Length: 180
Image (cartoon, rainbow, N blue to C red; front, top):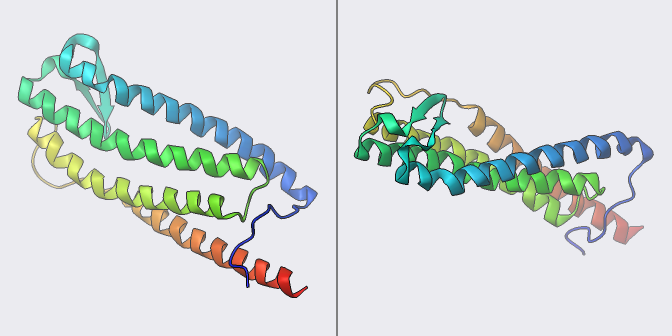
């Protein structure tokens, strides 16, 4: 028996609103993706030209010109640790909503992007734990309690579970289609 659907299922006309909203979300995630990519590409310039400006890392405005060379390096690492996984997450999110906009809901590629988005949310949570010591080393946080935001972890786990449920639903639909 077939494990997954290979063609997009025919969706009802009630899906049109979700399709339109998905186009908007795909556009929003695409703009954010390219913005984050531009920041990540320009980030090394902050080390070369510290007067080039500042960047927000975990709610802290980091002005590289005000930091010593070692502090600049740790601030750079903290920013890179934040932006790199977020870039991959944004890529998968824009792919998910791009697929939804095309009506590609239960296809293996769409489900894989949903799962990947969830996994990268979880990665963002755990890499966020490494950001705090880097910020302390840069002199941007006082040592002490680590400010934890559990939402990326919770939403990431929930998203991975939803992807597994979608994959199973696609498998059941494919099995049903073979019987009928």
